Amino acid sequence: MQKQLFHIESNAPVARDTFRLVLRTDAGVAVRSGQFVDIALPGRFLRRPISVSDVLPDGVVLYYKVVGEGTRDLAAMTPGQSLELLLPLGSGFHPEKCTADALLIGGGLGAAPLYLLARELLAQGKRATAVLGFNKADEICLKEEFRALGVPVLISTLDGSVGTKGFVTDTIAAAWPVFDRFYTCGPLPMMKAVCESLAAPGEVSLEERMGCGAGFCYGCTVITRAGARRVCADGPVFDKEEVLW
Amino acid sequence: MVATKDLSVSLCGLRLENPVIPASGTFGFGLELADSFDLNVLGGIALKGTTREARPGNPTPRIAECRAGMINSVGLQNPGIEVLVGEKAPALRKIYRGAIIANISGFSLEEYAFNCARADACPDIDILEVNISCPNVHNGGMAFGTDPAQAAAVTRAVREAVREKPVFIKLSPNVTDIVSIARACEDAGADGLTLVNTFLGMRIDINKRKPVIANKMGGFSGPAVFPVALRMVYQVAHACRIPVMGCGGVSRSEDVVEMMMAGATAVQVGAENIRNPFACPEIIAALPELMDRLGIGSLQEIIGIAA
Image (tube, rainbow over all chains, first blue to last red; front, top):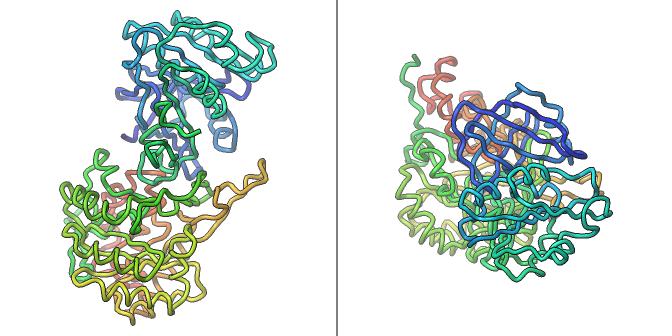
């Protein structure tokens, strides 16, 4: 983990309350899928942990939703402004554990870290299918980015405005995608339903309110089958068997 | 070029290379940050609060942001005293030469005494810091630290159990008169005092109309508490003869000097580590230039100088 100064290349809305933030730095960046960065915001005491959606040789691409005062501040920042990040943080996904076909299941902004995972899987010569769930059409993001990689994308919306009406589990049940391992990130009830309905091995990216983000304050503990674990440092990615729903 | 400055201080006969110590609970067991910077720049490390049995801690959310600080309700999550003395402290000693401070908690006099005896017998621990001020656990912690008689009872129990190492008692600011508690601990045989622990606080999510913290309340710390902590350090340092480790809202080298001028022999940095894991090395690196600017040759000389 290190502290590194980035500057904003772009910070633009891509869906309702959803922003795509591209940050560049002077040095190289090494982040794996499932890892996150912790952003210091001027005037805010704690950092904001945000998962990495893509890595550039000298930068990162992040997606965030405006949910409170901090993310509202972030949304008001403009290209050229600086941000201090801690990175890389957390464990990552394990694309190497997929044999041939991966299913990527994202709920809302949970799609973001799965994009980098898709790139890693493809680089390893594996195939991936993305199932992305949203509440409504105006929340959909990353669909075109996945398709540009050649990854088939199945969309479900709760109101049925786009794709299958219902949950991601409905889409999966209807489409019968081929996969030997799944990876999921999104709301807890969605991930629980996914893990209970799919027999294949899977990995889950958890979220919790964090203090340090780096494993030493023990603020984001989750009780798992393996005992008390830190979401920020032992996770955020856990095997599905480890999670106590 | 800054002339050579003496950052070292003497704490109960122990030489610290500098007075800056990450506070208990804000630096894990040190090992978590060993890959991020060279821990040997730190004057000491106060380890995470430890109880006899392992504890999973409180439910989450445990963290709430505030405008000049944060609330935590970790609730003494720790692996238990045997893991501390058998694994954590020895592993840290292998990579760290400075003062290792074990922070000991308990739910009874007997447990405090037992845990302190175990830590006293561990060759990899230099100082015991007895936590009678945790606001996040029921039937213990702060209950011992808010009454002079109780504080004295813990101190006596620990004093009888410890043969070799200096015993510091960590005091709560959530009291009417911290000086009376401090004096009670000194009279009962404490070798030093750490003050202050966190302030009992609360946040409410106005959208959800519910407390942010699962346990409703927690310990508030951060730059906002610095003047209050400084005042308490000043009062206690002038009322007692034993050394004080000052703690509360310290976030920069100027705060370290100010705490020492108030009477602190060493200075602990807490919440600032949570927002910036490199806070302590940065503060230490900034001290020589600040001392130069202030005409200070040795930090030891400024302890309690602001009478």
